[in-house]
Image (cartoon, rainbow, N blue to C red; front, side):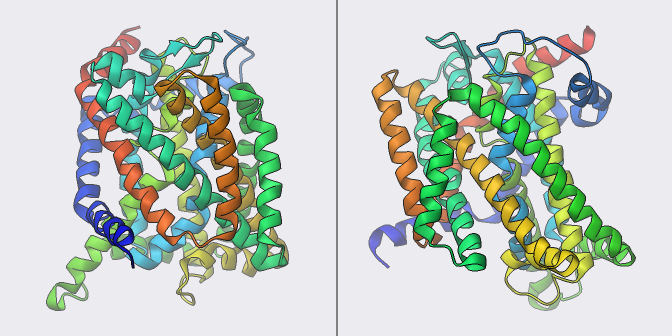
Length: 447
C-alpha cells in the first residue's frame, strides 16, 4: 500500500465512523423540528402537489425548462443506482438486519433535509445564458450566505464525486453483473454504455428529463411489483422478517464484553449510511436538477423531494429487504451483493436473474446520466467557458470505459470522502438559511 492509499484509508476511517453519521442524523432531526415535521403534517399537500398534480392536465410554464416531475424522475434516477439493489444486502451483512430499521430512521429525517435543500435551490437559482433555470447548493451558498468559498468547495467536490459515485461505481456494477452472467467482454459493455450515455447527454437537460420521466417510473414500478410478489409468496415469513429487523436493531443478546453494543453501533452506522447513500439527502446533488424545473413554487418542488426519498428508501429499499429476508436469501449467503439476485432467482428462476441485471443496468445508467449533469452544472458554476464542459464530457465518457474494466474498491472510499466534502458545506448552508426555509414554508401554509 503506497502513501496515497494509506492517506485515503486514514481519511476514510475517520469519515466512515458512526459518529459523523450520528451527527448527520442529529442535523436531520433538527431540520425536521424546524420545518414542523412537514413530512407528516403536510402529507395531504405533498400528495396533492406530487401524484395528485400528475392526474391533472397542465401546461408547461416554460418550455425551456423541465417539469417538476421530470426533475424528480431525474433526481430519483441519480439515487436509484446499485445502492437500492446491491447495497441493501451489503448493509445487512455488515450491520445485521437491524440496519434496515436505522435506514428508515435516516430516511424519515432525510425527507425534511431533502425538502429544505430543494426549497433553497429553487429560491436562489438563476437563469443561464440560454434562458434555462440553473440551481444547486453553489448558488444558495454564495447568494444566500455570501460565502463563495463554500460554493467552490461544493462544486469541486461534486465534479470529483461525479466520476466516482456517479460513474465508475455504477458502470462497474453493470459490467460485473453482465460479464458474470453472460460472459460479455467488459470493454465492449463500457463502449455500449458510452454510446447510450452520449446520445442522451448531448441533448442537454431537456432530453435527460424526458428520458428519466419515462424510464425511471416504469422500471421502478416493475421492480416493486416483482419484489412485492416475492413477499406475497413468502407471506408466512413476513411477520418474522419485520420482527427480526426490530429485534436486531436493539438486540442486547450478546452482551458479553460489549459485543451487543458494537452490534447496535454497526446497525446504526450501516443503516444510516445506507439511507444516505440511497437517497442522497443532504448531499446537495438532487437540488441541482430540482433547481432546473419550471416550477414557480419552491415549497411545491420541495414536496417532490420528500416524495423522492419516500419512494427510493421507504418503498424500494424496504421491499428489497423484506423480499430478501422472507425468501431466506439472507440466511445462506455471506456476499450481500448476491442477496437480491438469489431472492429473485428463487422465485422467478432465470427470468428473475435477468430482470435484476436489467434493473441494475437501467438504474446505473440513469445514475450516470444524472451525475453527468450534476458535474456539468458544478463546472459551469466555476467557469462559463463551454470548451471546459466539452472536455468534462469527454473525460466523463472515458472514465466510463476505465470503470468498466478495473477493480474500483479504492474508488468507493474516495467517493465517500468527496461525498462528505459535498455534504459539509451543503448542510452548513441549510442550517444557516433555516429561517428562509421556515418563512417560505409558513407562507405556503398561510395561503
